Image (cartoon, rainbow, N blue to C red):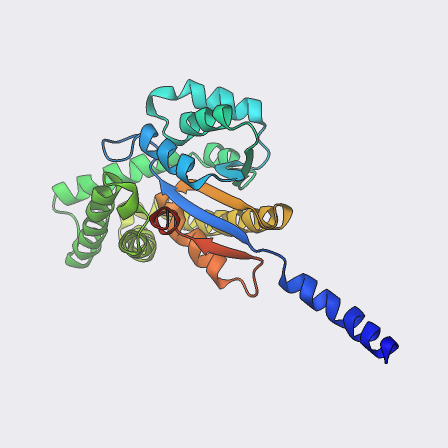
Length: 267
């Protein structure tokens, strides 16, 4: 009888132990890279103070060092929301860890593809064609769809953290991913003057998708490394939608997704 009870305990113990392992809390906190009246460094610092994270995940290439992060944050101090705020928080809370989760070759990709130069020239040429009435009605319609979504997106960018981290904001960014990126690709195919930008448009979409998947891969790795802890993912709000969606799609995760306002409201 005693042996049977002992065997039962031995068999059951791993199940009980596994079920008692606390899940990692992941908070994907959408930010704006440039401080605004409604989303200042003080605003972000206050959110961090109230959430008390164990680990802050920052949107920089995973290969970065802490020294490099500090150097870059201070260099762009006039327009940097997350960097200086995170530095201040870490200085006042030295036990909190800082980790990076972005794709390793992000900056290399932008440099080698002249990404921002292509982006600028594409916009200039597209709107020049519009001003000169050289767009077909279908092209005009696609451009109108792009403009409407971007206008709403820009309004959200100037709003407060609660709206930026909301289903409303996520829905707008979902539309941006669907209509803006796809319509840009279609415009480069249908307008002869824009054919030269077709590779840029396709590569841009593919790299964004690849980058989002790699970000989530890194986040989930940290969720295992810091099992049971609270992780705050600081990321531009346009990434927030993709990251949360991909994290939610993972089967049997060891983590639970939380909203920052959900935790603050419980205080």
